[in-house]
Image (cartoon, rainbow, N blue to C red; front, side, top):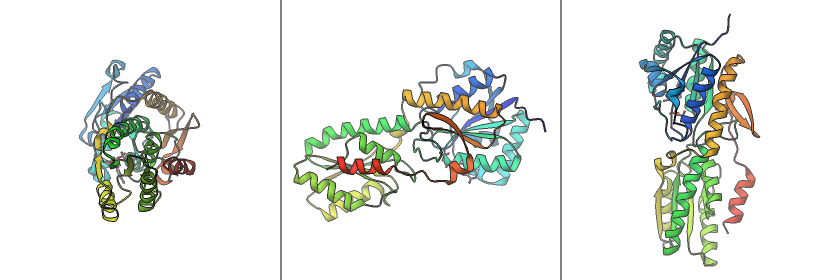
Length: 327
Ligand code: ADP
């Protein structure tokens, strides 16, 4: 079989992440540079099913590297989880003459992409873009650094008001099943505790961090709570604290979608640019069904199956650093 990619389709899917635009730009320009046509598929897998496709030129991606969100939109698409939906998506590929797909997104996007690749023998390359940084095989995902900085800035602001009132602030942070954002933001923000799914030590941490702090006349406590670490999130933790310690006054802040917005940091723009170029190179090298990752500053290709199914660990030294520095 001749293996030659003439037209590549590109989509952004699932939760949006700052830096997706930089990846769209990089894929487009790297493809064009190598004589490959690029078709943007709008709204992720939904656009693939509905045939929302437009060819992109280099100019179509001008002035977007600094913009958050994604100009080709993102969506969640339940139809793509059905064989009928994926068949419709494949019909669009055939109609548009798309020979390979570059999917920019997270775990769910790669899961769908991998099934699609196997069913229809289409080469699929994944570019990891998720604020959660939960994909195995890559040290960083696009959007993570920007989101981390945003959370840190919010914590800094809360610290100003927390110190004025001697309250316990509980800040709910995104992350799906992973505590990377929460733990790293807690270290960067000098927080008193981080409640994450990987370490089930809710009240213990609270007692240590807040109790110790009080004894040492610390005048504020900020605890970061990963959204799914405790059922009910930060509100549930606040209720727990007030029940055990009615003397503490708590306040809850849910950062929500603020964490996804904003102009990507330099680090995310560079990561997205490198990964976009590497994704096109992977296709030229006849790779398929892999995710582009970065390990120790080097670009690597990781099978999609591993990226999805293996679990990335929290670094124990970071956990210990957070505990040690919160006393
Ligand atoms: P993310 O890529 O950020 O993890 P989602 O989990 O919402 O986002 O997944 C994005 C999309 O990927 C879903 O809306 C769906 O279209 C597709 N997808 C996710 N899981 C599957 C699956 N098991 N089979 C087929 N498609 C899937």
